[in-house]
Length: 163
Image 1 (cartoon, one colour):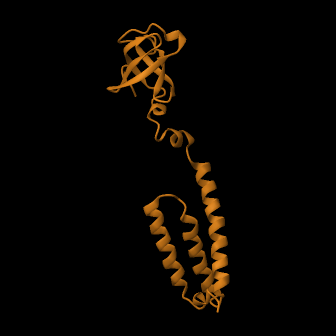
Image 2 (tube, helix red, strand yellow):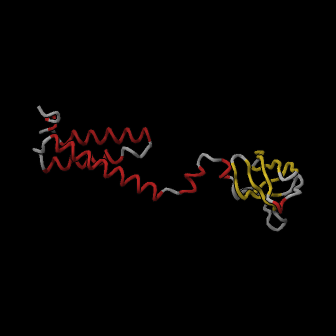
Image 3 (tube, helix red, strand yellow):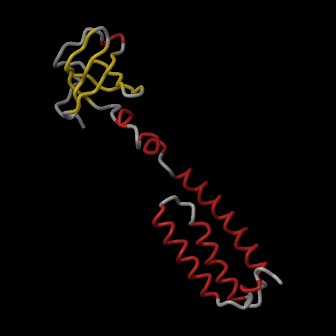
């Protein structure tokens, strides 16, 4: 007996229900992985409207093929449209600090502490910023691990706000 014989003669609404279930699971997971299979189930419901006697094995094979194709298409589209800066800095607080301005709390031998928006950060200075004194304004030029690389701001480039 054919394992997929149960699918023969089913209503297209079963594929719609399956698509809605997959869509609900996608909303819960937010992985953007079930969008392809959900749309493939909708495509299958449309195909069954036009070909109601489609064998179960053909339904499963078409669903699998369309699911894989749409999943790769959506993943490629997502990666192409995704903002790389947001994705890479999302869980990296130090990377989000690049370009921000802060005040030196203490500095000695090229290492110290700076304050940005009331938060103290470990910092290292580039060679031209050595000798920073408490109260000096700096700008974050880069981030390495949990250490901010800062450079001195002159009086003409310092602003009163820190973004």
